[in-house]
Image (cartoon, rainbow, N blue to C red; front, side):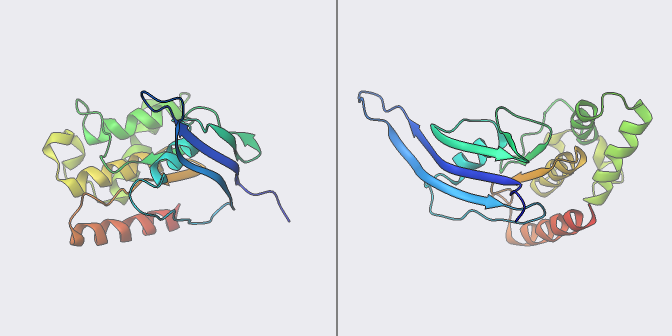
Length: 191
């Protein structure tokens, strides 16, 4: 059997508790593998550590114990090999939708020409339906559904090996959520 793409072994996360020597344990003894190409969901009640696990997988946080490896290498710190779509969009408010995507693409491909970066970024915005001038608007000028589409385009445009989605549809209404979920599956399948 081949080595798993993601391997979590005895992962735990504990946070200091003010006024106490005992830390708060969010989770412990987490063990699981993810194979390349798998679509995996982590489910559980509010406060059980789902987002904390996602933050550790993305490299935005460290586990207190255990290990996380991706493609045989220890995960330590953020990387362009791991794309993240957050619930709150996390777009740079002073940049247009297009420039938010360009920001990530430029970091991923510093040797590309301006035209290559623009074309690649526009391709992913087109995939999620941000067209006809909407790509030139700043985040404050876009609806919640459009903001999430830009976040998804930005994450896919850097062509990460791992895409992490932390409740990216939670703040959307049911119709928009269904539409964007379908769009996400379509883009995932196409790429």
